[in-house]
Length: 474
Image (cartoon, rainbow, N blue to C red; front, top):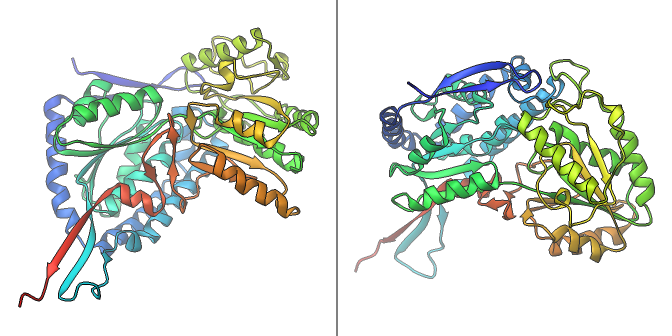
C-alpha cells in the first residue's frame, strides 16, 4: 500500500488534505530529471533567469486572495495575518532579484601584479538542491533559499512540511507559470525515511533545512554519510532574549515585545521567549505587558476578529502546557488568569498567552525552546547581568536591546558594546522578530549553521570557481 500523509486542521482537528508519498523508483526519476534539467538551466543567461523571477512575483501576487485562509486551515495562523506573510515573501523575493547580478558577478583580480595573466573567480551553481521547509512560516522561509537557488542556476527539490503541503505546490505553480522549467522546481512529499534516502543520492549536491534541532542533526548525519560530501545549511531553533534597559520607552517596548512573543502563537524560530528587564523599570514594564496581553482575542483563526489562533497540534499544546506547569511548580507565577481565555482548555490546541514572572534559568521555560505563546520576564540589575543571562543558552539566533538611542547618544554606544558581547546571529535595537533581506540570516550554537538572504545567501547556494589564464606565453 502506498504511504500517505494527512494534514489535520489545527483548530478543529478535522482532516484537510492528503498526499501520497512516491516510491523509491519514482524519487530516482524525479532526481534524475532535476539533474538533467539543471545543466540546461544553468546555461540560460542570468538576465533571463532574473526576468523569469520578476514574472514569478507577479504570478504569486495573483494567488494572494486564496492564500490566507489556506494557511489558516493548514497551520492555524489567524486569517487576518496571512497577508503579512505574502508581503514578506514578495519583499524578500524582490530584494534577492535586485542583488542577483552583483552577487553572482565574477570577481576580477587586478593584472598589474601579474602582467600577461588574467584571473577571475566565477560563482558556479551547486547543482541539485533539496530544500526542506517548515510549517510555521512556509512561504517566508522557503523563499529564502528556493528562489535564489533557482536564479543562481540550480535545480530545486522542495519538500514541504506535512502540515503545509499546499504552500510548496502554490510556490512551484507560480514559478512554472512564470517560465521556470518544471523539472527545475519539483515538489516532493516525503516521510523522514524517504527524505534521508534523497539526501543520500549522489545527484543531490546540497540540503537546506529549517526546523528543529533534532531534525537538523538527522539531516547533518544523513548528509555526512552521503557520497560526495553533501553540503548542508541548518536553520534550527531559538530561545531568543530581549533586554529592556532603564531608559527604554516602555509603552513602545511593551507593545513590540508582546507582539514578538505571541505573533503566530509564538511559533517562530525568532520569537521572543525570555525578557530581561532592568530593576528600575521592571514593575512598570510587567504591568504594561500584562495589560496588552489581556487584549488578545484567542479563537477560530478563520474569523477576521481573531488575532491569536491555536498552536499547530494537540501534542504541541500539551508540551507547552507542561513547560508552563513545571515552571509554576518550581516557583514561577503566571500573571494571566486562566479564566481570561476560557477556550484554552486541556485537550484542545488553544493555549492561553502566558506571562511568567519569578522565573530563573533552573526552569526549562527560560532555557529550552517553547515554540508557543509563552514569555518569561526576569529582573536584572545591570547590562553585565543581562548579557550573562542572554548568553546562557544553547541557542543563538537573535537578541534584542531596547533603549532610548534616539534621545541619548550614550545609549547607542552602550548598545554597540553589547552587540560585540552577545553570542547570536542577529542583534536588534528597538525591534524584534523580523528578517531584513539585505542582512544575513544566520544562527550560532544550536541555532544552526549556514546563511540565507543577503549577498551571502547567494554565496551559500553557489561555489567559487577560479579561472587562471596565462595570456602571454613568450
